[in-house]
Image 1: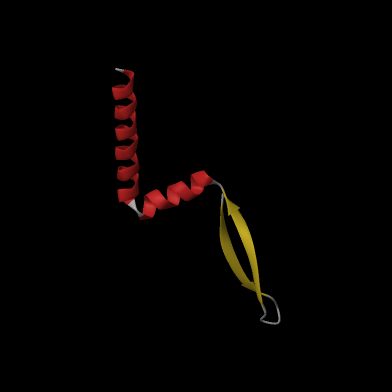
Image 2: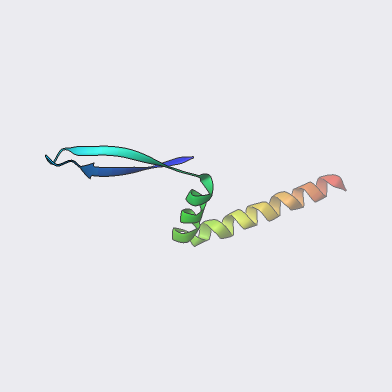
Length: 58
C-alpha cells in the first residue's frame, strides 16, 4: 500500500501534512498511465515466466 502526502495550511499559515493511503491497484494504474512501457514490460515478463513453467513441465 502506498501513501500520498497531502500538504495543507491552517488559518495561521502553518504547514500541516497528512497522508492518504492508496491501494496497490490505484498505484499500479498510475504507473501504467504515466509509464506505458511498464505495462509492456510486465506483460513480457509474465509471458517469459509462463514459458519457463511450460518448459519445466515437459
